[in-house]
Length: 308
Image (tube, rainbow, N blue to C red; front, side, top):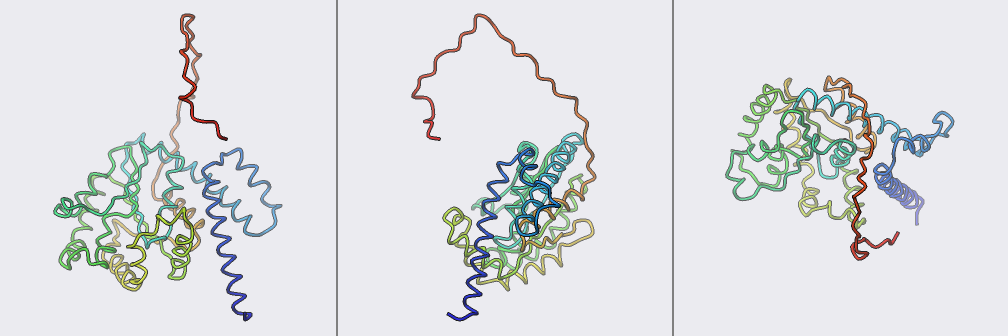
């Protein structure tokens, strides 16, 4: 084995290790609370430099930003605002990870995700935007679209799922459609998550090897790998035709997943002039007890086995 091959293998092992750490971090994020965060972060100035410091800073910033998202949620509810956020990008670009971090501590009745499947036969005969309209927010709601009506400008064009006439009509219609949303009072924010060819190849490889992530890799994703340049051309035309003063696109550099999440959330918060809403303090009322109340027995077989 040559020195070059040894170096390449060592670099690959390091990338795999980093990816596994990211996966563990994802699980850790779902379990941590603010008290444990303090113990995790420790005294940052005294911690030696390295990847571990990056993770600690990431956790600290993530929780801070999620606290601001809770304030945003309260403001949206209080002011009856309508917020729509579009997440677009190539397969494995990190859209889902960013969406998960945004919704993680929010009320699902206020902030929900719209991830529509491929249109059925009936939907294919409807006005193109019709199936998306039913998922738009009412006052006091936030909707995050994990892929959106821009499917027509990307996957449908590249994979031949629409005609050239439908494709061109989309570009004529979408600015009008989005301007209608904005004029109706909807706050619309559009993100494109950008990754490199090499990074996508690595993430696809990790999905293939990880049985917990293989479901994320569809036959369509695999086919899309062979059409990288076609997707690039489609993305460039999409940005050229639909990046407007009223409804601009924002590009998220998503090669580093953690930085992408923090940058996206921070930028999203900057787009909305929310304010902290004052709430009356919550007072827990005393437990009301009735002397004639008797709790009925529960059969032992109804209990979930205590295996842990």
